[in-house]
Structure formats: C-alpha cells, structure tokens
Amino acid sequence: MSYIEYNNLISENIEGLKIENIPAVPATAIIYETVEVDGGENLTKIKGFSDIEISFNFVYKANENEYFRKKARIDNWLLSSTSKYLFYSMDKYKIYKVKQVKISETKTTVRRVRRFTATFVCNGLKYMESGLKSQTITSGTTLNNFGTYEAKPYLKIYGNGNITININDSSFTIKNVSDYVVVDSEIMECYKDNINFGKNMTGDYPVFSIGKNKIGWSGSIKKVEIIPRWRCY
Image 1 (tube, rainbow, N blue to C red):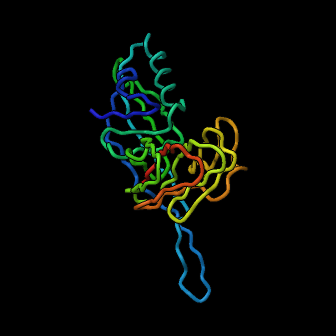
Image 2: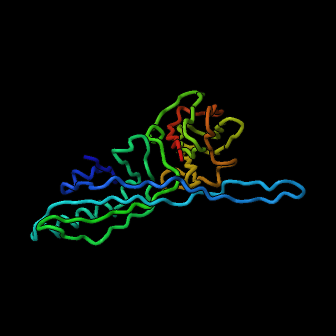
C-alpha cells in the first residue's frame, strides 16, 4: 500500500488514510524566452517552470459520530504549513515542494466509507531526497550536483568578522558576522535570527552548477552547514 509524507506526518497515521490511485505526475513544463539577436539566430533561454498538480484519492472509515472529528484532523494536516515537502512512497528518490493544497468535497460512497481527493500544486522542478539532507564542512571541499538543473542552496555559516565564500568562479562577502549568519539562495535572503543581513552582503547568492562545485573561503569561519537542494526535471 502506498502512502505520502507531508508536514512531517505519514498519511497512514492520519485516521487510517489509504491511497486508492497511482497519481499521474506531469513532466516538468519549461517556460522559454526567445531573445532576438541582430544579424544572427535567435537565442532560446529558460525563463522558468510551470507549476504541476499531483492528485491523490484518499479513503477512510468514519461513522456519523467520528466523521467531523476525523475530517478536521485530516484538513489540519493537509492545510498547515509545518513543512512544504511532499514525499510519495512509489517515487522514493524525488520530493516535491508544495505551494498549495486543494481538498475536494468528501463523499460517502458506502456506509462509513469516506472518499476525497487532495490535489497538491507543486513547483515544476522536483528535489532529490539526498539534496535535502544537511551536511557540514570545516574546510574547503567539492560537492557534486547530480541533479539535472542548478541548485539554490541553504548555507548556515559559523564565523566572525568579514567572511568570503567562494564557489567555483563566484564569491560573496558578508561583513560584521557575529557567531553565524544564514544565506538562503532560494528566497534570496541573508539573515541571522530575525535580523536582515542583506545590507552586509555583497555579491550574488550562491548557486551550485551541475557537476562539481569547488567551495572555499577566507576569513574567520569555523564551519558551514549546507542543504544543497539538488533539483531535477
């Protein structure tokens, strides 16, 4: 029996939910941009990715006295925002980042048997499970991006003073660091706790290209925690 994990909970553990279908997972839809070149062939660039929708048909049992309580728990699980990552047991190596969840009307097909459909609106690119695990480095190293598209990592940098991180041929500098600072390329923010450090940062937000990525630094840095967020079509 297949299951999903969402908001850090497994569907089977939510009022005994069962999945009745194998969902159709759309291919990544790439949005292209055409750039005109005077006197030459036009260039085609990737502009972005369309969202995809994945629908699961759920069934569970509830008598009249249980129904509203069970439905409330199911709705709370699906609509809360503890974690926006969706894992499907039949597709073990990819994880989807959810932007929205739509829940259909619940229908009673047989006495006590309740059915509904949950549709997850997700980012067009998928995430590799291995790329969502944190890893710590204490010196320069090389990370391999085995995905099929560039990755936008999360970095938690422990250090003090003015620090510079080098990734391949790019670098960024953060001034006046005290203990640690976070750089999140996905949301393009640099911060510590609730304090915005964007004004202290110069350079581009880091990106991991496909293949090898050489990482180094200068300044007083003890360690860097990295969630690389490898992505694929």
